[in-house]
Image 1 (cartoon, rainbow, N blue to C red):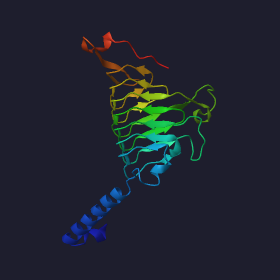
Image 2: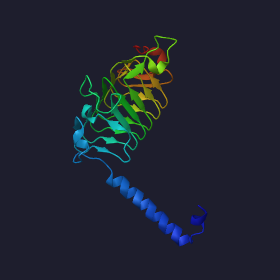
Image 3: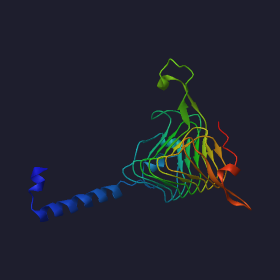
Image 4: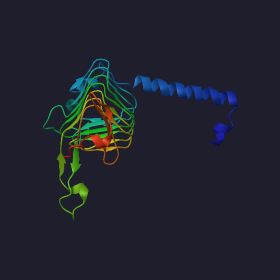
Length: 223
């Protein structure tokens, strides 16, 4: 650092521009699109879709399906199973629809079935999984207890706020908004706003009434 600080101002600025240019150029060159060899390993990789650079951990992509015009942000991890080369029971395991945007740093960890509808947008660092460990034996470490799976479905047109967590067995209706930081489990209707830990309905659109307050809507059905 001391050597860099001693460089003449024009030299430092020139080197800075070069580094920024090279970083942007490498990120652009490393984008994965449908013609790329890596994309051809997916179950489906729709026209106009892209994995932005740098890509996060992605494995068993033959069980992962992307629709058209979907953008997967930088450092997004999408996995099927616990390890590369694992044979899965369901196919596809993770299905992401068309015209979706998955925010940077998000994790989509599938083992059984995660279905993300069309026109979904997420903030950064969203976590979606269809598997969790059980707690049947209070003496055994949690991580060593047998996991269970429950399918996750996210309805088309929904928005998932930053840092929210979607747990196994969750079903979100169409055009649902999930507040940032929410922890979601259970079934929720179309056209609602949910938030909290655990998440609950904050408001819901009812035809003929408009947006209805929480006291007037039923709680989610938990699984």
